[in-house]
Amino acid sequence: MIKAIGEYVGGRVLTAVLFVTGAAAVIWFYKHPEHWDAMWSVIGRGAAWIGVVVALPWACFFAPRWVMRKDRNAAGVALLAAYLAVDVAAALLLAGVKDHGTFTWIVFMLGFLAAAAYNLVVCDYQVSRLEERAGW
Image (tube, rainbow, N blue to C red; front, side, top):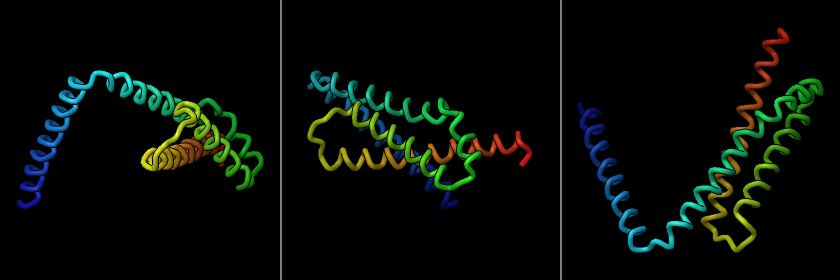
């Protein structure tokens, strides 16, 4: 009973927060149209970076096979480090070389952590598929 009430109230509160936030965004961009281009620039660069992060381990489908042949943990670490280095370089290229504040660097670090976790999961999946095919 309490769970149902909590879900009902939580859903209503979340709906109200989303409605107020959406209305505030519409009002903000109506009064400050010069910020509209900046917002879309940030969204576009962020989407481009996410595209790089998502496509990189799949485009390098041959790399996990190389790691399996080496049969060393160091090879796997080197592969994941290389993926992360490319992700970091792409993010810094897309963000530009300018003074970034603390909040921006925190967002960068969280993004890099998410990219590293994604690369690990994709590489693990690719290796498991290769092991299935090899009959290991």
